[in-house]
Length: 69
Image (cartoon, rainbow, N blue to C red; front, side, top):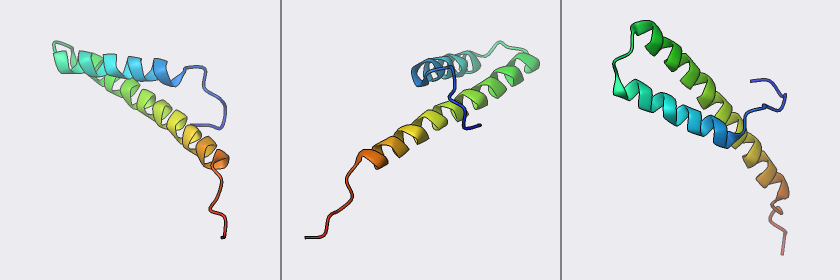
């Protein structure tokens, strides 16, 4: 993942990832279809992790550090 801001929101990526999982669990796909979905799922998981990492960084930056008493 690059430092560029993704165009897909966290919520969009998470929903698409959930759909990929549902489709894989339902079965009935060819091997090629399953592999393509798995690869897309990996991309979406990476994108979700990117969003979560950025949110964690923003929270850390906004949280005051412990002040000495």
